[in-house]
Image (cartoon, rainbow over all chains, first blue to last red; front, side):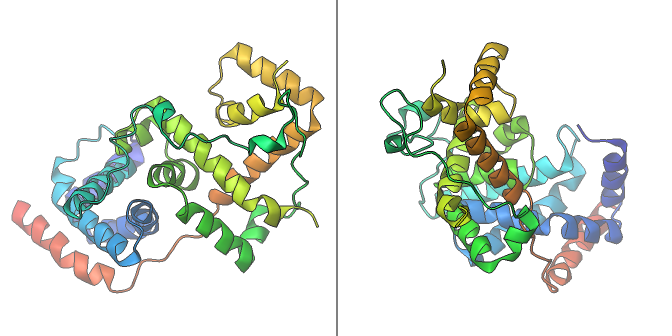
Length: 208
Length: 79
């Protein structure tokens, strides 16, 4: 729920305060671009979606009712724009077709089953990872590129969920609202996405 | 007892505190006895930490120049 500070900020925006608008753009631009990239893979298309989102925000501000946080409201506008674009380009729309995650043909285990013995205990247990803190790892170009590639390689729906949940720190119920998916679905997609990224990093981060 | 394979499938729900207490307890009992699974969960935590700290792109300099006229136009229409 929006707090007092946000209510005051929204009031300034609605009054046409340019400084507030500048703050809004600098606060959310990077997040919107990331989220747009999770819907449309091409950079130029993602930038266009972000631009359209800002126009939607400008025109929609007077109708913003504060029923969700400002961030969720803006993310929702972006998701809608990206979906419209997908329809226009006759691209497959990942989210609406994913009401029952267990019926997905691409059902996937978190860890390669060959890593367990017949009783389901580790046969090839996880190796120790480097103790380097996240900031240090992200400063390494190779690690950074590996993570970005791992995110880019995710199926669309998984990428959108993990971007919102783990990168943008959006609450699960708001993610369901933004992506129009069920809570169960959201949890399954998050689990699969995280498991895939762990697998993608496993060798690289293993202690030599 | 919960198998390691089952634990890897419960990892996200466990970390998000989405498990019913009975399941949560089963995971905790398993973790107290299995260093491999403790390591697995630490790796998942590291993944989350990395994702939460990804650098963000700065606003391109010409974006506001494009958006501000629109913002003003809408404002002046409502005024």
